[in-house]
Length: 155
Image (cartoon, rainbow, N blue to C red):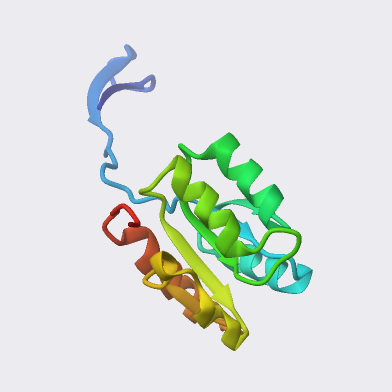
């Protein structure tokens, strides 16, 4: 981008205009939007605070029903749905099944602190799982890997 810069106190007393080339920034990678669906308020707040501190935009929901509604409203912005597995009235896997009906290429990451997470429906077993409790470092690594993973339809 070229701009002009005026020097008003030139020796001749007349303003001098010099070309000035301003640097342009391209290919800046801005973290995407993450939908965090977690019924435990402390875990949800920690997750959101950590992701925001790393530049991610956050949508939040406290259960599967509100998570699905939020995804449907903002699905073209959501880079990753990060969801707990154990929630009521709709579990994370139930919500994910609905999301994948709408968008089979949606990126999904599960969070779980229980062994029951291993009981995911067969087609969801290959989706990434973050075990609770997790550190901020583990969370950020998990999200980065999940967001940058190649999109493929869940069969």
